[in-house]
Image: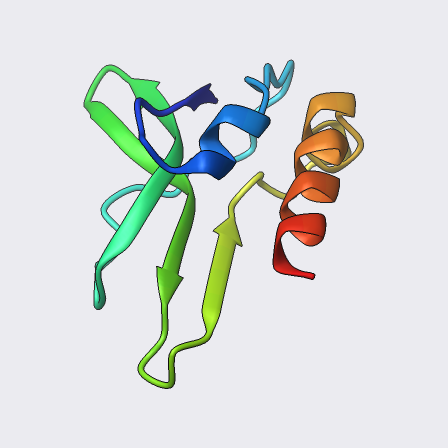
Length: 91
């Protein structure tokens, strides 16, 4: 997963994530509100957002991250560092 080219201040705090095992990559998700793409996965069929921020209809901040389900994804040190960054951002 690479950090997207974004002016969003949070993007500067995230680190690229390299997963040794990939169980699935979420692609072609429906965008139902404006969002900042913070990190993407690039595969042969295109670039797909994996970490995004949007503001919901009530003005609340929502951050989404899609690492996959394998233990290798959820215990990855870069993933844990980014997860902590996202949680601190939302505080």
